[in-house]
Image 1 (cartoon, rainbow, N blue to C red):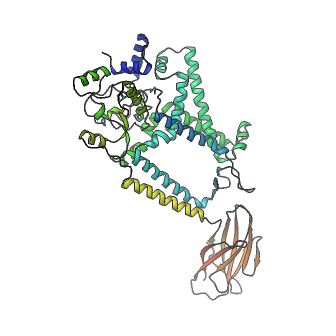
Image 2: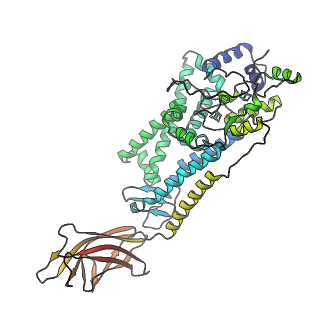
Image 3: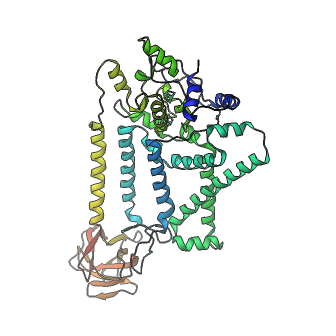
Length: 520
Ligand code: SF4
Ligand code: SF4
């Protein structure tokens, strides 16, 4: 009798393979197999939590697969990598006084540009808001469909997927690659390995290259890099990103997810019984067995599962696990095993989705004759979505009403005040004026809080009575020393609240800063 694996080989290869080749393949697959086949049973085995903390890496040869989830993964891969590699070249016209790169982290001038948004260092709280949204977005994804982030969007997954595609293109699909790895090191094998690593390094190098383009004008930096005139730090970061990308996506792959990333552990603590996870529907699949055996059992009226034990779900898995063993920390929820199993089910004429995004709760409900439940909208998803919406709304409102002028004041520490020979008391301040617009603006600076006050500044500002006129260039900060004096009679140890008011002469827009006037 044929085993499930034999049948699957026939099914998936169209049958008619040479027996010798078949045996070689089976030997190689047995050697590469991550774990022995779980015993067939009605219930799925409990996850093994007594194993060693670290298991030496066994090379995984993920098999090519076609299907819905593979197509989604391709689409996400092209979209995310396309954005990452090309975004630095997108231009955005901000006028003559600002860079024209749509997304730019401008460290020398301490600015961050994102299309129409320009942020100053003082506005770092927007990043805090973004981090909150990102974290809650991750929690929401987890509440809806488990580690869907890991399976589709995580950079480690995306780049590993790309590296595996290159590997399959150079080394052949799983079986051919397995066979080739069993062969001695011939010139051809060395050439193949060299080509694969060269292509990996090229992708890794361009990944690092794209990274640095976010920190300077991309076309100029590309030219400078090509002529070796770019700053050393650019080459250094390209080197770091090249090494890390090559190591993580080419060499370490699933080990990063298993041993380095904290998210699987956090995710496991955050999930609940309604979160959809890639699940082997053992209520339908067990008892597993070959097609012939299951057909014979059905003819006899005995229970027979749909799983033909063909291992296709294991062979396509990028982390090399057997989803039929139950929930597994190594499962990144990529859905490729669903595609593989659906292909097998189609070929043996059984319904699709023996493996599916489902819950253990539903399996138990089906086993007890109850209909399955899918609860996407529930308290925790509503809560996450509501907080994301609230933080987003606050950020949008804050951006829409963002002030394009600001003033900050620092009182002199020592001395706190000076008594002049004519009895006048004087306090010194450092005043900083921010013009966040892209045109030069003229501001009037006044001070309020004392009835009899005199304001002078040190520098090239024009003083008109008690008002100081200051011109601040586009997208610039202007710092000046301000001297505030009064003959007013002050109480002992005086600390009188002062308000520095900045008024845009043209638009009338205002900004204020508060401090105190100190006396003897
Ligand atoms: S679950 Fe599907 S793909 Fe996996 S061994 Fe069973 S029949 Fe094959
Ligand atoms: S078990 Fe399935 S969903 Fe999980 S990582 Fe492997 S192929 Fe992806």
